[in-house]
Length: 117
Length: 117
Image (cartoon, rainbow over all chains, first blue to last red; front, side):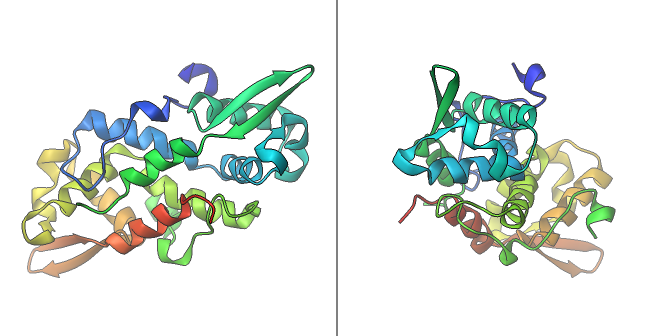
């Protein structure tokens, strides 16, 4: 899956050690870096922000191409990365897929940046 | 500076719009993505975690090469990216530079991932 998507996408649920709680091992740092890499793209951030603010909390894939200003295949790619990472859920209904944000996965990343206890 | 460092590093202080508060513009998304890109590297995350947990809250650049397992020029590069982004401060004393974490800058990124009010 990582190869097909061009980025090493793991479900964010599986990570992440807090950045400040102790020195990170290489494996812990790789998992956390991969999670931040999912967010390190403007098109993906725009997709997340649009879906999060959509009416009824869900957005049709068909309504995401125009506002983000990328091609349909590019949008599809980024939606796959976000879904694979667990930041979006996808539900197929007829011809289109509908997306919802999974705020708990953003919480995981926020918690990884929390100050030391 | 961005060209020299190989990544587009802006001070994180200057950004960032909350991801979930409304649909991000392209410019807002680019700033936020650039900030997450600084964190999307395992060596940089290890450096941050080591400096954050160093005795007296500061670490000598001379003590950062061995634990992270990269070459000295690579470590220097990553320390420059982190300093440029405002996540570390650097103080030169004699031959060596000493680094401290700036937790307020991580707070900026954490806040950008906060749930909608």
